[in-house]
Length: 189
Image 1 (cartoon, rainbow, N blue to C red):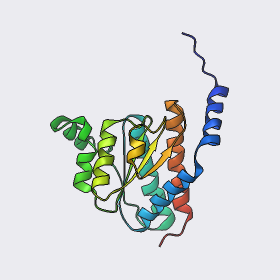
Image 2 (tube, rainbow, N blue to C red; image 1 turned 90 degrees about the horizontal axis):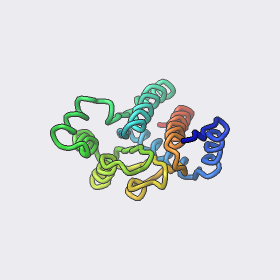
Image 3 (cartoon, helix red, strand yellow; image 1 turned 120 degrees about the vertical axis):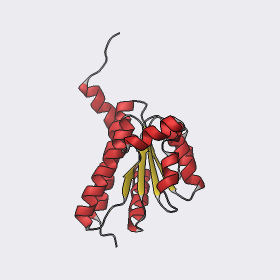
Image 4 (cartoon, one colour; image 1 turned 135 degrees about the vertical axis):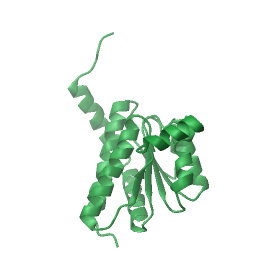
């Protein structure tokens, strides 16, 4: 099988996403996160595989940098960061319950769940969105491809218009950095 990779083609794929991404959805998602932060509610993230690392990266950046920039704590929690809880839910219940189960224990009305997925079709993130929607928790899906099953379930969506998983994951990380820069540059009371 011939490898068609080239740096130029990968760069072109990114340029195409920048041309086609819905900027209004980016601003709407950033505003939702800023509003949730301003009210002192928790911002909770989750994802699988590379998206788990992205969800964790969001919280790492936001907890540290926003507090440094504003002097106010950022109440961020990543549901993939506690290996004991993830494996307990997976072993004792089912892998599809690893996020919804944790939400039931820590989430409150008005908190925000940000579920990250390249395809938008991970059963555990879908169940987490469903739980959040039933329990007064705001929802944001950060997805790629066509949004999968997560897109229609979330109250807000950031859709990376690409079927290339690595390009989607790259843009999901960019979104996290856009959020951080926005939160760190504004005065929230």
